[in-house]
Structure formats: C-alpha cells, structure tokens
Amino acid sequence: MNDGSNSTINPYDDIVSPLTVNDLLSPLTINGSLQSANAVLADNFSNITATIIAKAIHDHIISGPGTPYMLTSPAPANDPWGKTI
Image (cartoon, rainbow, N blue to C red; front, top):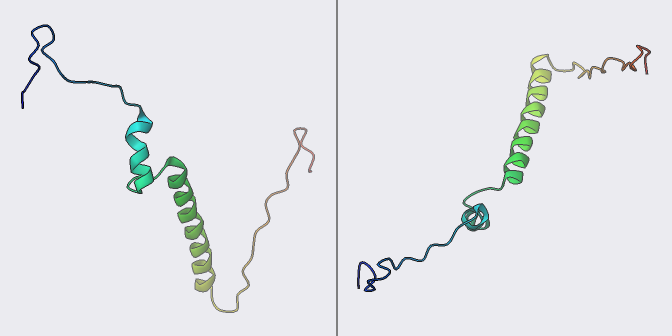
C-alpha cells in the first residue's frame, strides 16, 4: 500500500467530492440517532401540552376537593374601531 500516487505528474490520489447537509444527516435521521426538526418540534409541543395539563390538574387538587374547576373566559375582542365583537 502506498501513501500517495506513484505518478510524478499528479502526486495526489485522493478523490474528493462535495457533501450536502442531507448527505451527512439523512443516515442519522433514518437510523434514529438524530431527530428531524419537525420531530423535535412535535416532541417539544407534546411536552409543553402535558406540562400545562399537569399544572392545571395540580392547581385544582391543591384548591381542595369538590372545588369546581373554573375556566376563565377571554376578554371580549374589539374591532379596530373599539366596538366589541
């Protein structure tokens, strides 16, 4: 095995080809080692939703048994001229 080319005209025998981002990341996402951006966002939104629901249930339990869970209604919406919609 040679460390280089035996040619005196071109002493380099390496073949170089450009790689794209997909060339590098696709095998990792297919393998499952790396999540796609969409999968990461879906996972984050799922965690946020679960946290909000757990906090609401926790706050309801802390307020005491038999206490009705009250949903607050949003403030009435106004059109650009200040009239309630």
